[in-house]
Image (cartoon, rainbow, N blue to C red):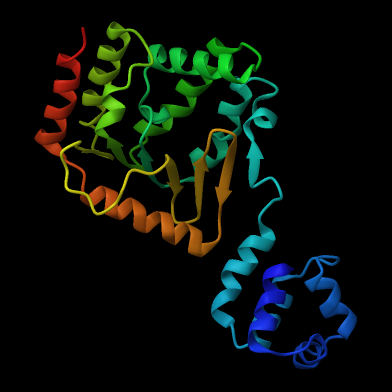
Length: 266
């Protein structure tokens, strides 16, 4: 494993010395370091202990467990259509107790109306050239989003004000979407904040991401979807969410920003 090899080199010990400290054969150390043999959790802990780097073990274990599909191209994910992609996260959504969602581009999927979701998914299908199953995908998204009204789960959303202004649908559909957003803000298990254009910021706008409990992060780019589970990765995104959340307007001020966005529609 490359990271473990770097740890060994950083402390200046040979592969032979590492093997002695771990009680292994030298060939085992070489096979692990050169990614010919996957290490067990116990192997990783022993390696880190031998290098006086115990603090790095949790990240290395998480990275080792993480699927090779952690960074997956959207074309591969969507080759069978958008409906299946919506359904693929169902178990994760049902298992998660606390969702933290930051968006800088579109209304979060959790909060979308059928009309807004249909227009957005139509744009995605057209751009990516995926099978046209938008109606089924929207229905699947709405079923998935039923988790929002489960009082045992909590949701914290932070939206950039730009999300309220970007027009991906008709004015009528956007007005309905923003009205729905105002209604969702009344739910006891939902917190919505909006970072105003005028805010003095300590954290710059970044790509959209979702944190599931304190266990994993989904961070998407134009070409791929990344699942991050290393503790240091989750902690980094958690700190970013906390910063962005502190800069968000809430309550009456957030509602005013949404109402202004509605009023600006032609």
